[in-house]
Length: 73
Image 1 (cartoon, rainbow, N blue to C red):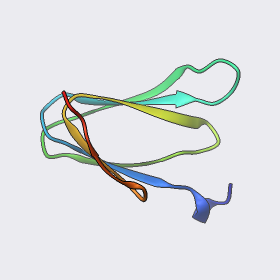
Image 2 (cartoon, helix red, strand yellow):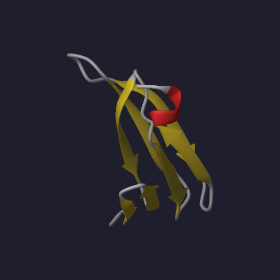
Image 3 (tube, rainbow, N blue to C red):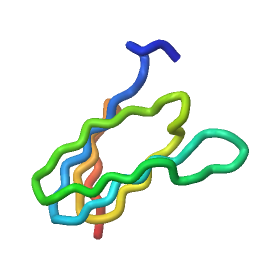
Image 4 (cartoon, rainbow, N blue to C red):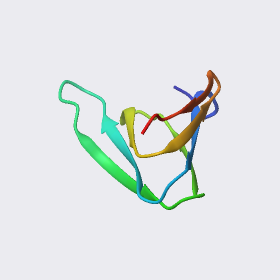
């Protein structure tokens, strides 16, 4: 995947303590990075050669090129 072809995801915390967890690619999916957001903080992330998925815990709005999603927490 070229650098300009990677998708970006924007995550905005609606409450304090929202966790964004990056998961690895490969045979064994593992946690490899965690960020904690305070209310109102925004994190811009992307999928990479090492990151295949993201898990978001807490109240947040997630914006992608496919649309906007609000967590139901």
